Length: 131
Image: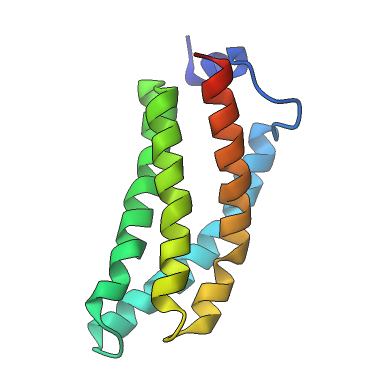
């Protein structure tokens, strides 16, 4: 069974966005992530902010990148639920860590946080309904 057939076979809430919509949302979010995360890493490299500020960004990137292989490669809903909770929590951590240095970066995370909040509720629902 392909990953798409598998995903389509899962019980999901009626408000689940179509895969094309999810892809479009990420097309908007990834440039925000690249610019804000990249800026923060450059500033840390230049010594303008402490390196510890980059830790939540790294955690977020690793968890974000891991989600698709966990969800669609391993087809492990429970682990994907834990992973998306890490993504969600690390966005909050990013905002807290960077707020006093670059508020614009913290505020730019708002669309990312809103989408990941929705995606987290969706993932937790799918995980619950399919176990």
